[in-house]
Image 1: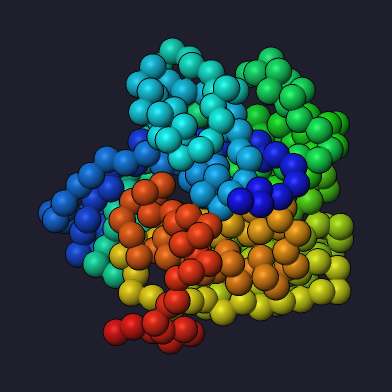
Image 2: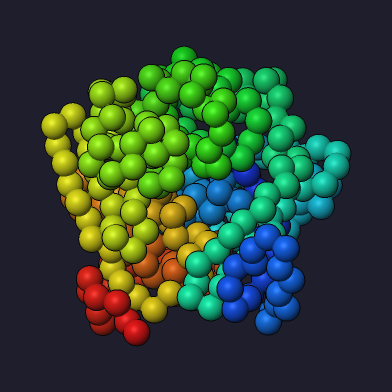
Length: 307
């Protein structure tokens, strides 16, 4: 397998996901009986690391595990992610309560737990093993992301940011040091103040002219922009079961394809296909496909909803 050039370090969250199957997402003041519940390993950091590994990349997971985090470490290792930079701390691990409705849409509540206990010492110790040939993949489910960005920049690493979940403090981070942004429509609007996808991309390009910008649009597809280059990738439409890890799968497969030397159009196609396959399975990490599966799978319906 061609693993491409450079290593990937994912500094991100590791959660236990408690997934509740419901007829519809619960609204304010409402009580809804769940049809089922299951516990799986998740978190944007873990999901993106596993997606990268399943796409054939060389991946390391950094961060902090709680006293109950043994299954998370084991899950990463079983999926080909190196965990030597994961440290254990006292207290409970992070977890998420996820509602999944009958159409596969979800709503998520997060508790940071050990994910919010990263220390500056741990940041420096981890990043000293990486160089300008490597990628640093970040989200906003750990503490001190701005310090991780600065440390990665000093090492010359290619820095990838998915600013999710969005908070106003993200605007104060050293975002000019980011090489690749992955944002959805909501995050794009929050970062730029724009609502239309084209305006979001244009504003991101104006603010960060040297960065690649990938704007995901759910069932409408995704946009890619870098300088004057613009690409649109329609979504592969499938019968959705659970979209929980679809966005993280898109991120992992795009980056793995890029590291293999694929052009942006091919990276977008591979990422969209992998995300579609992930949305046909339940849970986060278990639904992420292998690179070979993405290459050989022929989706029965392309650009068309299955009713």
